[in-house]
Image 1 (cartoon, helix red, strand yellow):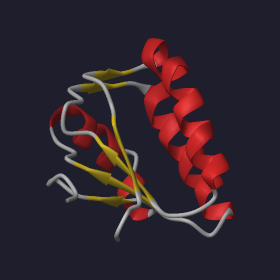
Image 2 (cartoon, rainbow, N blue to C red):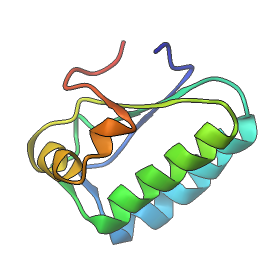
Image 3 (spheres, rainbow, N blue to C red):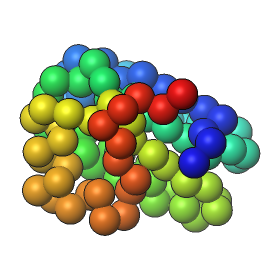
Image 4 (cartoon, helix red, strand yellow):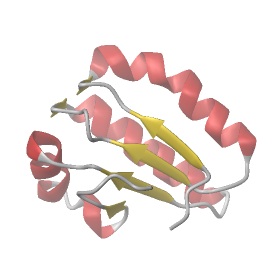
Length: 98
């Protein structure tokens, strides 16, 4: 995937930080062009709010015919996303997308 929009997520992507990223996600959706890549290379903790925000973004992008990729996924976020089988719907890469 060649994402035209790249967004780096913070060290913790949880209930407190998700609310700060909603406007960014909404802006990406209003753009209505290009695929999106979320860079999780700095994320060392994700909770259900963070996972929910990613899945919600994925569904909204899909409804626009766009794609979402997660890059730089490792550690606790990778374990959680794999356990929840998010990788079956959303492309996950351990390396950061160029």
